[in-house]
Length: 187
Image 1 (cartoon, helix red, strand yellow):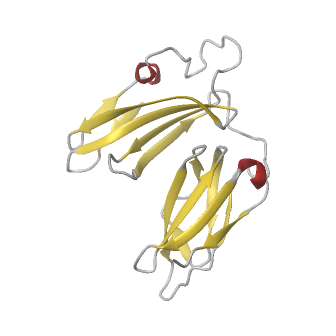
Image 2 (cartoon, helix red, strand yellow):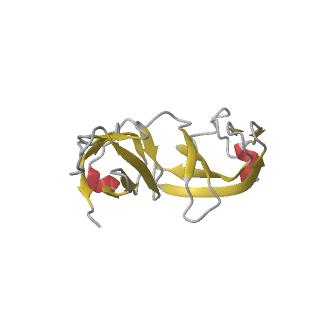
Image 3 (cartoon, one colour):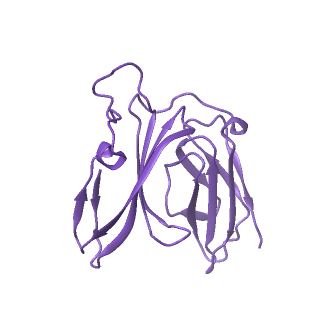
């Protein structure tokens, strides 16, 4: 795991590693608080963070991999935490089977976030890979990302033009069979 602070000020954050089996069942999770100076960097090994050997790269191939997704997240220390960065490794390959939304239990809704922007909240019980957001009149701050199983991901949608009104939309994922409707929360 390589962590780099590109900011001109020091960064205090939480580095979290989670291992998942069957793209849903968390089998291990550890975190470490990091303090990086401005323009500083740090390196950690997955096995070092977990304090045990897990063959994270599936290099030794002692049978099938014990985990099919390794999620590494850099988060703020505040609660609720803000996701700064996230990377997902698939030791045995990316998920290719398409699953119905009901099996993934994926949901998305948007709520006003000030200045015409919308906070889009997405959660999925199973890992959603390669998520794309389709919202007419709005541009997502992030696109083509993955949703960690059982966790929420918030993406800010910015109006594409003056007077854009959020009326929902849809999202798709590479392992999702068909689009999922994005609801509009008016609260």
